[in-house]
Length: 63
Image (cartoon, rainbow, N blue to C red; front, side, top):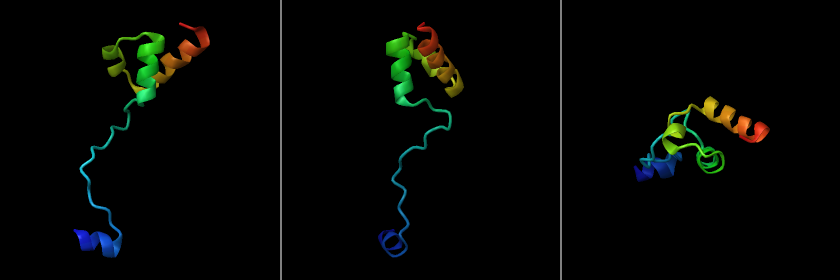
């Protein structure tokens, strides 16, 4: 493994999990739970598009 990496520049698998394509960024979760006041379980069930729409509504309407 070491020489394969050293000779060919191939990085080894470090075992980090792949993030799901629709995973919400941590900042979205923080804003939705702390600013908007939505329960964490509700935020966890949101799609990315739903979260963006809800944040936009908060910023435009203030609610």
